[in-house]
Image (cartoon, rainbow, N blue to C red; front, side):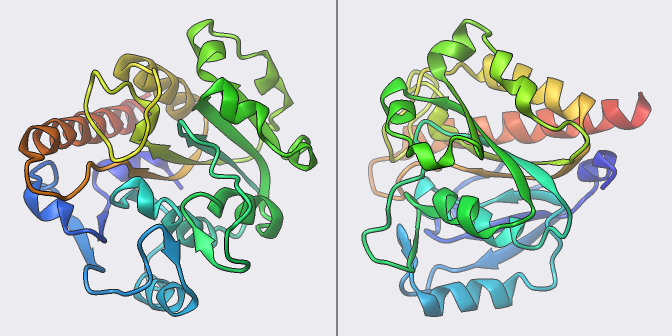
Length: 258
């Protein structure tokens, strides 16, 4: 995909919790609105029927473009987008959590285990690069994934210690998945524990990736809880979404003009 297309591409909104109806960042954009509010079996765990319904609803949409996939409870939706990729690629995931847990229920996709599922089942993934996780989460990674996953904890990112990234085969394109819980809670609030990354740090890394590599698509999750009394959190979350959306569009234009 020519990354410059993202500036004009369809932006997909996967509205699982209803939160996006209270946000404005996409109002002047060309968006595809996919509503899953009434879908059962979707919150944190995605049961078999919910999987089929989601896959059916997005079957005519390519992985290219920009996908907003609601809160971290639905980060498993990344799996449905990357399943569409039919070439070798590297998956870059910004997340405070590894999402590599053993599922509580076998064969049921979850927000905490979706990445382990992809590591084992998706044969097109060459490497998974996890950025911004906690040191504790990094240590907990199962050794069986050591050849598949490159993990940089937040300490390494603060120190700009990127030496392990030399293991990546740069000839492959990249899909980027961002869980905004990688960002510090001083910036805004998600419904999960959060990391220490600054927004500028996230954007600096994104800029380098986007200008140097072929990007297949990008998704973002990490909305705050859709609850009463969350108006301030919602406003800040909307602002971060707008900031990242505009940043990605600027980088796309820069790539096109460069």
